Amino acid sequence: MPFKSWIWLPGVKAENDEEELVDPQAALREKCQAKGHIDSLYKKYQECNDRVNGKSKTTETCMEELFDFVAELDHCVAHSLFKKLK
Image 1 (tube, one colour):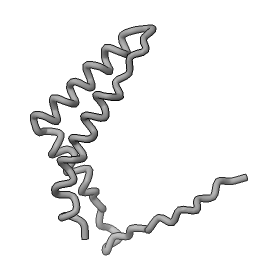
Image 2: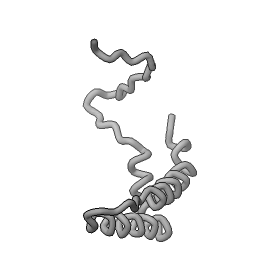
Image 3: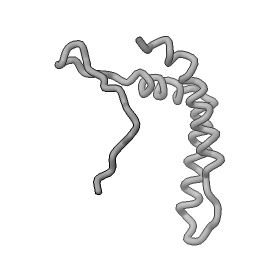
Image 4: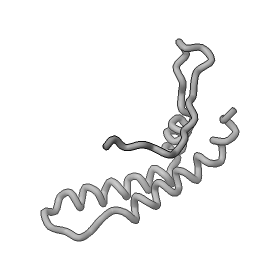
């Protein structure tokens, strides 16, 4: 039985079909990630990820580092994202 989605998602169409749509959130995330404190959180997450992947048996996860990074990145993006939406 095929999965049916009961959630309605609006479609997005460009005014000009040849025009490429750009996601403003992706551009803002790149800009925010370049900031020092967010970049340091990303490096801390990568160090944890490398450490965990370097071990064969470990119970350590990097969820705390990941959540810290994503929360700070989203906080930075939120300041200017809604100004760019139509």
